[in-house]
Image 1 (cartoon, rainbow, N blue to C red):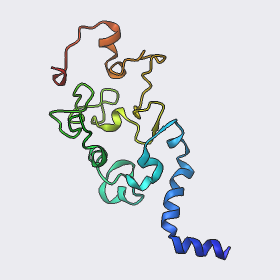
Image 2: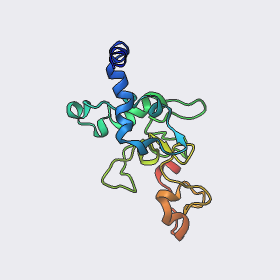
Image 3: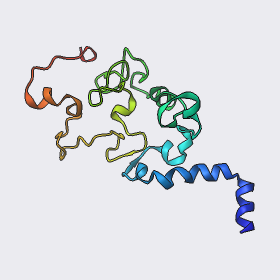
Image 4: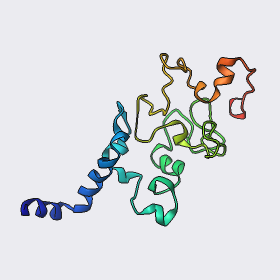
Length: 162
């Protein structure tokens, strides 16, 4: 017993606790085949157990969602900047902010409107399964724009598609 306690004190009790405490309750966060590297390595890359009280960000995030995601994902060679609201995301220049989430209108649209920051069935960590075998039949856009794609409403291109 004293060897274990001594090891914890030597290596740092807080590092041991941080890496194990979250997963004890949040077992489903990493249960899908594709995992976000930051989530696997250390929950505290994005979350701080005490921060919600000090900053007011949900899920105990250090910062607002997009700002936090863009710390690592700001630039990909060959693609425009994700963080530039006038250019948008590489998928057809879709905006990454400044609009309501079409599936959850009470929320602002942000990175996690589409991507699961922990794990996903989709390689791109996309939140919804849009594979050919899913209800969306391989149409990524159908997740939010179902009526335009499947019901036959005349499409009105949003500004970022023009």
